[in-house]
Length: 163
Image 1 (tube, rainbow, N blue to C red):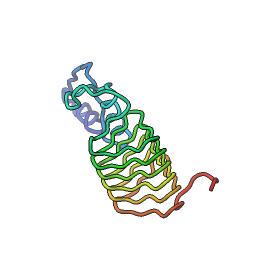
Image 2: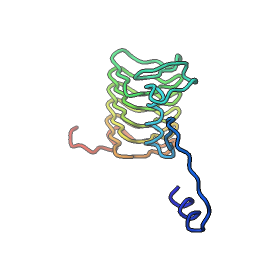
Image 3: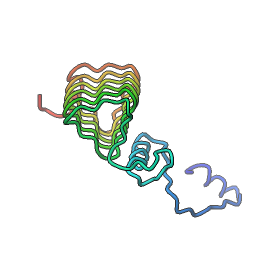
Image 4: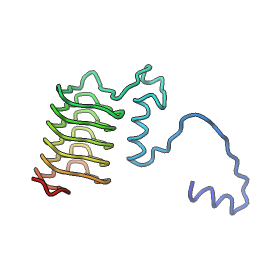
């Protein structure tokens, strides 16, 4: 929209629009994908695909969520995923086969198929690729991206000074 429409207008092409009150979101970035997913789960963007489900989380029947884990903000948990005790997921999109270990915090992030998030890790506004292995106590913040299959050792990336 930033290149095509201005070029059409400068070439004198007639450009028409249509006003629609329906929900619409350009989900071309990870941040917008996470927001769009949360909007579906919370019922802000109703979809017949969810069969009327509406709430703070959508957890596949084949996933395991440990007691004491907190899932809020339109979090989605895929088939075969395991969420450890004390984990906190807020607006997270967790794909199939992911393992999130005890005490980890995942906020507004995408965790790809089969990835592992070690104990007490913090992922905020990030994207973790399929099969990645994030060690204990790692902190990935502000748009961090981890490519598929990459392993980060325990405490390998930290932004805070605490141990």
